[in-house]
Length: 204
Image (cartoon, rainbow, N blue to C red; front, side):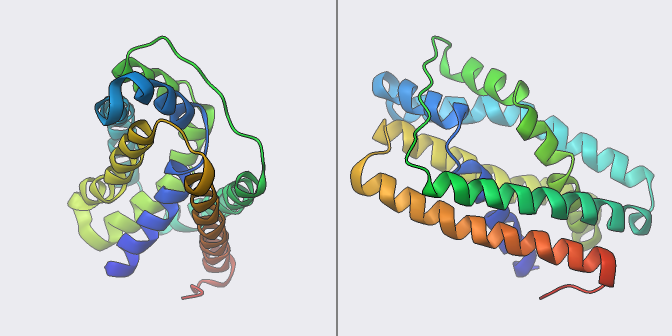
């Protein structure tokens, strides 16, 4: 059980901490609104994310778990490897995203989440496999526990970004180091999913 939660935190963190439109907009909002602005961005993000998780869980409940495991493991594993690569690439890149927004924090969270194709693709590939895993472990409560394990990272990170208002100097170097390590972890989990899909065993 603890291994599952650790996996959710590691995979979720790689997405939450990755520089992108949402984190950049949150940094901009934080200049005027502080951590509360980041919290409201997170709330907008959550409003979009929660229904997606429960929708996936609903469709998972309609199918047999065995029928879903291998296809989702292949899809999720491939996406994790790609996402791990992009995370490491982002950590090593010297470029920073610069996004300005005139929306209020809540709407920023809603719009930059709902209109992000990578976010949607992540939940319907990697996220679906996590939903299956959580359902196997916890039954009908799986989606709720998965969401709880995942969402606090968004709130904590975006609130922190807004508080700091930008990622510079030592903070940026620390951030890049974390991203690099998380990228390696995500690559490993991707290989683990593919190993399960083709050899029916996990690496750990």
